[in-house]
Length: 160
Image 1: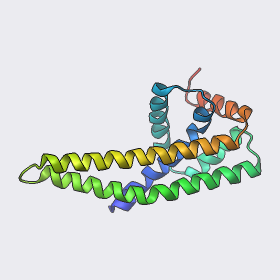
Image 2 (image 1 turned 30 degrees about the horizontal axis):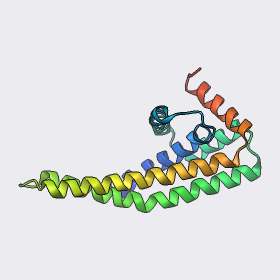
Image 3 (image 1 turned 30 degrees about the vertical axis):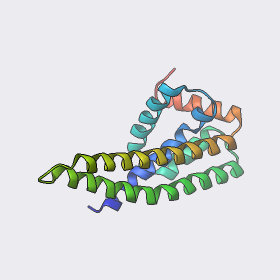
Image 4 (image 1 turned 45 degrees about the vertical axis):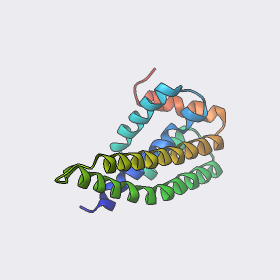
């Protein structure tokens, strides 16, 4: 199994997780603690969906998005996915580097720390890309549409 094959589903889940969470972030429905919980829920939910486009369509239908809104949001998601592709290649290489460092005959703590710092920088960049795309997508929808989407998501996930 190649690293590209292994990490592509992660990119899809991240981008789709961003799209799923867009109404919650832009609507101001969540505070800092619940955002992390929602991201975990979205990532777990996305693991069960291999069809990113289909899930995005269902979300946009739940929000009663117009054709123009759908096109704009799909462009935002596509752009975020493109930005994440190169980042995921770097993350895969960093994973390999960390594996090499930790399985070496002698552990170089400084090199491990540098690798950790680089991995966190990549994670932070991914977070910025995804947050920006969530905000951009949320701004395409009206407050009423974001509320519809949030209600549909809560119902789907058994929340009240």
